Length: 120
Image 1: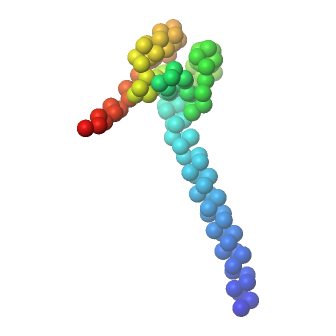
Image 2 (image 1 turned 90 degrees about the vertical axis):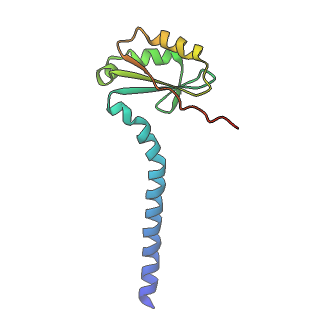
Image 3 (image 1 turned 45 degrees about the vertical axis):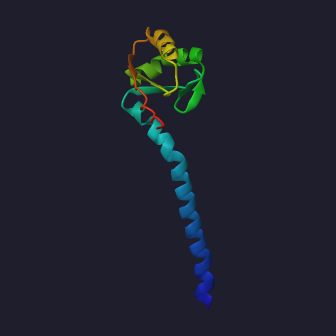
């Protein structure tokens, strides 16, 4: 009977620690996956259909993006700039962003969105 009272709090502590570890992993894994290309020298910029920009899953203004990409600390680690437009983004917005970033000393790439399945 005495052992049961000792094992119950210990098992609850182990279970709580395991659940906290699982929750932390579920929160951090998507962030790590989004930032993995940066380790390979690629900066990914996501262009939304409304023209909004996201860098490392954070919204960013176009003027701030240009200033950030021109920083020497970032340029020393990155050599490619990948633009990832949403499937519904007008190509005029993509071309406008490309023309704004064309003067940077980074290689520009476009990751074409996957085609949306047609209802039918």
